[in-house]
Image 1 (tube, one colour):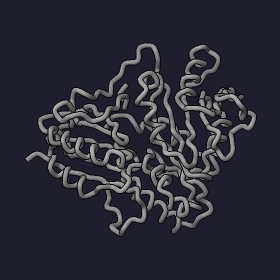
Image 2 (cartoon, rainbow, N blue to C red):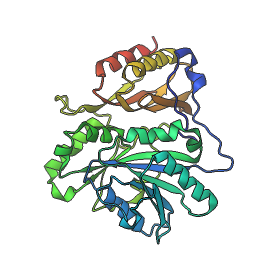
Image 3 (tube, helix red, strand yellow):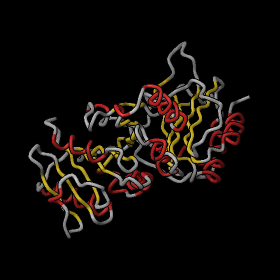
Image 4 (spheres, rainbow, N blue to C red):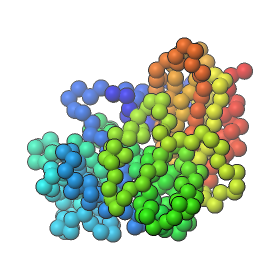
Length: 350
């Protein structure tokens, strides 16, 4: 299984290659795919989860929601216990937490291993005002959780009717920036020009996330599950826009940048560039991913990261006659565009 299984804080350039490996062999346990569901208040996360938990899809899905939700999935779950777990009629599991997420994750594993509950997928609902980054990092920092769970993707809902108001908040922009897929709700409440304008704005913020419409919580499960947003492979994201975006001044703090070159890259210079960038701007870089052509190497190099945590691996070989092109996508808060452009230009071999 090739996946973003290990993130580490970047080290000196000379040690870059020996530090990262995305291959982990799971002899006894298959890791449980995890989907993080994000979105600003009122965007429709609970409606989507209700549909997910009531649908007869044949999947055993566990959903973790917390006490800050504006409307719980099942009010019977709310109570004094730090973690409450209920198995629903369709075989799914609903977990309401009033404590640390890590404790809830371990409790679910204990009950799974004991046979008390059964599930093979996990969805975590973030609160409307929550930054999804700490939730995502949980699955890379804790070694035992990293072995039992594998982060599949971050899905962010966007309320079409109130997006202009919501996007005045930096946290709402950040939720979009972290996303592997964007689901637009309340599409029926806006006209076509407004939807087009919103789609263009979302693309400026996050150029690698496909945009889909969710209808009153209903959407094809393929848009939610098996997104593989954190897999280390050459797929930069099905929605990535490599076309130039409007040069008009952005009103959003969060934005994205796509860089391309057909020149092979020097791996030592690449390491130096990334280490310097993350040292100075790591807290700003929400998500980033690159598929790179390295000097003297027949295989593609793939890397991606969240804030200061990143990993890389070698992918398939370039095909004979195929154009070897390096592409990097950065999504950041107050994007240091000129610094990134200048540093990336130095990486290309002479």
